[in-house]
Length: 305
Image 1: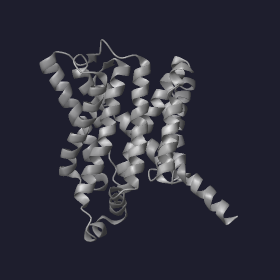
Image 2: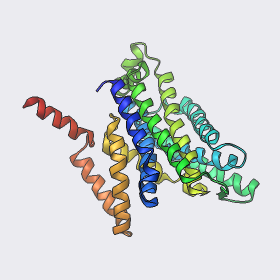
Image 3: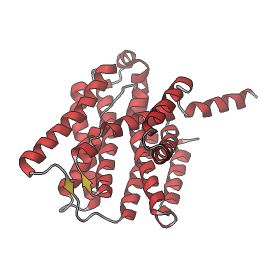
Image 4: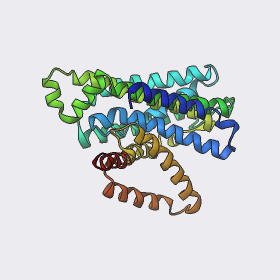
């Protein structure tokens, strides 16, 4: 499928999903919203990490930053402006952090990006207690659920379109070269530092914007909720289970993972995390290429036949 066809398919799918608030129940709409949120997070994470093979655990940090931008400016900023600023703040911080730590790889980079989330969470907790006299924030006048749904849908669609555009651009080629052999890419004239910072910041923008959008959905936020490491880990797992080197893989995995998590949570409220962990272990052991590898195998068998 060409880039144009992929973008057109994304736009048509997003257009079809705009009617969901008037077709389904509130529970189904909330579940769809969760699927869209994780689809946007997983695709934006894979846009950088899937191509470069860097393991970033900073998604929760950027998500929480965007949420607090909305919480602090909810009374004085229009909803769309707060979402945009949340994404820009996350992208700016990602650029600064990336300039300092993107020379690291492997476990070192993963640990530092995970520590970023904890650092920001504790810093905001200290600020809220010391200067605001509170820990949580209540958003008294959130927009209606339809507006929030359409905002998250728009962000998820933009994340997919951006990932498609990046993949077909010189930046995407540079990122794949970094993932294959960073030293060789640098030798061939690729400005690896600039490419990594740009992609890392672009990925953080969508995480921050989605955090800003979802803060209005929750109406009450606190550092433990929006900087929850589970958000970051679940994003990584969704992208890896779907196939981080692809775009459709994380999207499909976000839907399946969200539905499966909700089913296990309702049917086995005390065991669902254990069952989910066992299922993920089995997927990693027997399907290391992610769900996208099934499509590759099917195409290979079809071509062989």
